[in-house]
Image (cartoon, rainbow, N blue to C red; front, side):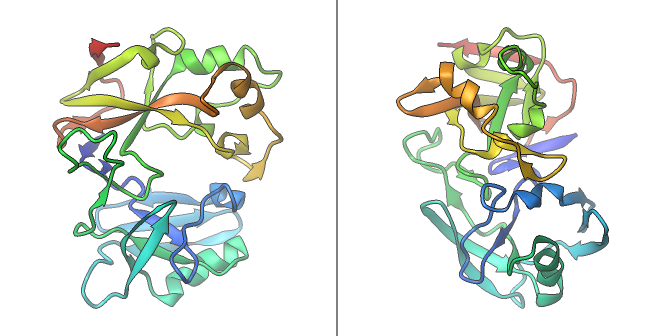
Length: 251
């Protein structure tokens, strides 16, 4: 169970690793990040990693006593709160590079691309690449896997919502859906980068698949598309595993 907030599911991508200047790190450059697990509690996180003692991390780093810094995600900038050295050292030691953990305070409002915003430019997003939610149908992955020598799991694509029972790529034809109590607008297909080539169990880049095969039949205007980005029309609703996905409008 989670809550569909304006910037994404509650707690989703509200934390990020950066260098000392605030430039973000992802698995694209540091695939070993896939081996870090995060457990969310009411007032803290628990970070875990293989052969490493777990780390307890307090939430709420947005307090005035915590260092604030401008951080950069692609072409956007926003203010984040930086955790102290003892927290950052745990991540730096495991990943083998100097990095710092930052949290997005509630006061930070990072805007969605206005070309795809639904609420007069007031839509916001967390530290995700660009949009609050990502949806993919199981039928779409099954279609892709039928073309691969070695099937890949859904976690290669990191969606928030996985839909069962729909036809392959049916989500490409949806404009508006209801999940649980929340109505979502499907605003933009998701252009894929190298992330799907990283094995989430080993933290190692696994060759060129499934991106190579996906590119052979899902390339539009130079972008390899898989999944749909969503914005919530009425944020605040509860989302549960097993909720019906009702298609309200189609292309």
